[in-house]
Image (cartoon, rainbow, N blue to C red):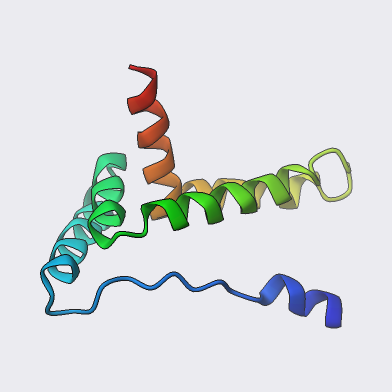
Length: 104
């Protein structure tokens, strides 16, 4: 049970307070992402919130952690699903947009 608690720990990334300009922009663009699922909306939302780098780092760390377990046939499917769920998040979309943007 103690080992499972390590996986359940969450590193919270703070977004701007509601009512502030940054908070309003984050709210607008995160709502836009939820509606459209467009990668650029996630990127803009996290950038306005000032948390893009923190989200990118956390996303990459979690994907790397799950990728390390893909070699184990017993756990591969579970960790592959975890990576797919991460890629479907706002952070995953922002990282995807950023990587496409850097290639062009």
